[in-house]
Image (cartoon, rainbow, N blue to C red; front, side, top):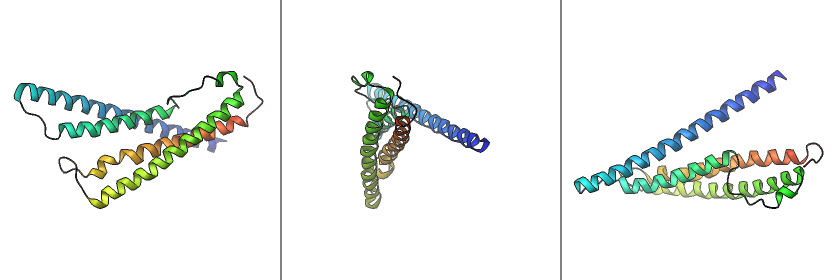
Length: 172
């Protein structure tokens, strides 16, 4: 039993580290967006100039902060849910519908991650750059990484819900 407890502790520590990295990245991106936007406003209003890379970088950062927010929401299954009728069902039925929704989310996010990875690979092969000489494929990496991480989370969520379907007797 000790070996199982130790591996669970390591897994929990790894999840805590991933959570910390996600939160830090989200805060850093949001902070960068605020700083760049404030600098653009000040430079334009006070000196009639701006950062040439400011507006394009803000557009990319909006994509990154949006997907980081989605990744954060997937952490505890906090995405938008419509579960008006589920409160009338027992625990097993709620777990079953949770597994179905989780599997569908996993499927959709997995497909999007796959095609996003192909998209990034094509950008890599073409070799075009965005602003400030940054390759476009680097800016697009959030797409397969984000959707892949969400798919992984929903794989774990779905497995948990399936386990709940078969656990114990049905109590509401």
